[in-house]
Image (cartoon, rainbow, N blue to C red; front, side, top):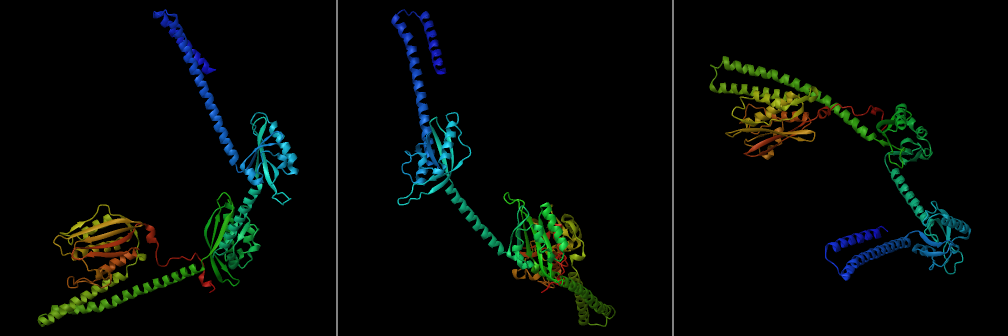
Length: 585
């Protein structure tokens, strides 16, 4: 209607324009005027009829497409679908209905021929309810009813097969409706397979849990024990079947008495259950009637947080007896090593004192002979006494160096955060005469490390001094560098000296090892050994790389965190208070 009004308005506007044209222009011929009046009317009519026909064709095409789509859905549905009239005659059936019920031509049948006789009245009643709904397309039944359909019997078989289904329906037109039957037999078959598959997986999981070396207890959201693995029987000498179905607290009463500290364990477990929290690690020991520790366990309890099993718990006991025995053996060996080191240090001090006294006497007498009896000695005797004095001096220096080396121990010294910029600045001042004429390159951003300042000063002093002493270049250069490596700092001291042969790169860190004794007769050969000991006491590593005739670089690592220095190797208590002297071997 709106479209027609639009065309009439256009036609009226055309005639207004035409009237103005007739008045303005000298048109007097009736034929021309008639043609001018007829042309707008004809064009408007043609356009109106063309649009109306196009719109009708489009609607027909859309309806045909929708009908074709609906037919495709109807035929390809996995459920049984029937288009029926009010009397229950089947107007159309989909492909699934023919496959399931084995009826080749279902379109000419009545529902009474497909529905079990005992369910026919229920279907008729439901059909009346469907067509009683108002409107051409009702929503139909929202909840289905259980109906048995009858499969067409095979030739020679007089007992037809029934198929349990759930029927729903809706009205399509005033004379037709659609009935949908869901095949419950197929669903039941799938559910059975699912249950069987779930059971297989459960048995697989249970068998896998039974093979674990740890004892496992599974608790559901109601707080009841649903599974106990075989290892629980081995650990606590009980029958696991007696625990299943009991509350977690009652089940715990069957084995908690085996623990040495029963009350402590019970409080930890109950608090975790009550607050639904984790127990990451609680060490407890199982004792026999004589108080002997038979087994040491680590108890862990973890709440289940998945949606399906939320509220349940997994508890397990890990046998750590061997680990704890190894830790105790390590502790005892470390303690013995510590005492041995103390005795060795005491012995070193005693030996150094006992050796230094006669050396001082020998050196003193040699000086007296040189000073008081020089005129009575010939040149050979004087050289012998001077050699004796030099030898005793070097021997005394070696004893002092050995004593220094054996006394390096971080356990007896404090450690702090050390600013290496400040340390190197002080070292540069102490070695200013030695570094005179040396190109000493130091970065402006040296890190802060943890350790003992006195020992680290000795470390840098020895390495820098060696780099100067064994440099044969006219323009000696010494460079300090660093980079961060995880929780450590890698530092290096590089020179442009004569270099070291590869076969000596490890030998130089041993005590009293000197590559060229003649070049440095006053040295003791223990400087790099001291450096190695200092770095190792700081839980680091030291090594050298060299290119003969070009350069040598000494690399070493120092701790970046305080915790590294606190992890002392010796004397650490790591047994969680368990009395290993009671372990029954």
